[in-house]
Image (cartoon, rainbow, N blue to C red; front, side, top):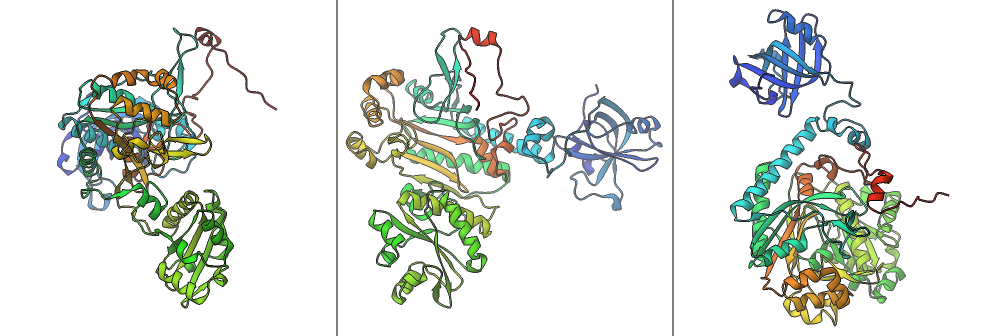
Length: 591
């Protein structure tokens, strides 16, 4: 096979008159009776190839048998297109290749969908034929961007003196966090490895080992219920440092992300990124990962409405809850009564018992609850919400967490529905000063808000075993356009603090030693102060590429039900394989 001289998509006017050898796939073939035109595609783009009997009758005859997606080698000369034949939609649109030779390297069946952008087929079909889906230019471009993003992260960390160190995939199962993917041991029947949800403990041990600056572009695994921005296996940019403050770690992270955006999108992002405490984010946006590209902030009106004779508001406040509102400016005419009822159904998904609303018309409040507001209270409410004619006021009244969840989700929905979001904007945000614990209603206890190795604020360490609900963490998340793209913290590096942390989480000293004894031992051998962050590579690429599903940024992803339609994984294994592992399967009972 002759060596390629150029990629198809790289040809331009500077190549006119040059002989080239191209390898690629036939995107389209057009027979104009005596002339055949082929659009030849490779990873860099498409170029038009002309088969003319005046240049090669033999090549024309072979081209007559070519069909879409055939793999071919073409030898020819680059020629300038006529002025009327220029195709401004192609990067190569000012040139074409006059074919002298063509070799068919392989034929192709008719693909189950067109190899083109915007194809209207199911995700299931795309994933079943993922190798065809990835030929489409828009998918090809995503993975070019992913390569650029990964390379930029790696180059930046290398330049800063970080060591790229691999950690094992077969590790120990721990009870905190999501469910583990378990791997049975053949050598030790009845024992299991776990695939890592993150290299968290191991990278901390690397700090104990004295490596000072570690990073890894690492695969992680979580057996959890899926959604559009989650996958059972994913890639993160993982880094850990010793002797640095959280501000220094954040500065390194900002520098990396600024470089990534510049390389991938040619957009300059200003530093430092804005910062917001967890409390402020929840108060203003009802979310710990707020999208700050638009307003619609939540406003607490409990003081204004506490004396209003509306039982829903009064009951919420009397029971320790709150009343908050969103003022959707100039949106009153956008929503009919039916539309507003639908919004009530929407917030019910987040625990809200209903959604009260008012419209402002001719300086007065209109709507089902307007009758509960005497003139002075109506004026006070309008002043508090800066309400004007045409505004739509939406209220939630309940416990603070339900109000935040329901209005936070509603805010995001309205931002999209009212077209308030600049999709070209990249809005980074640090969310800092997190609670160390959060209450798990299902488990009936406090659990780690991040992970059990997060350092408490020094002044709160005495509260670990007396009032853990008040302990704040040296933790920080990085948010982009309403997505959490990374989470980090300073880590516990003293054994006695780690022991207190485990006890606060409900571990006995014995169970903590059984699960984490190796870490506790390491903390007795001069572990330095350290901290780090993990950034979600798949999610960063998803946002930069303008996609809304992680599947588009992973070469061979799973469906929403954790199935791979391409390989039909997961699948059954043979009885012999199970016997080697001393395992038996239990058939699921069917009614």
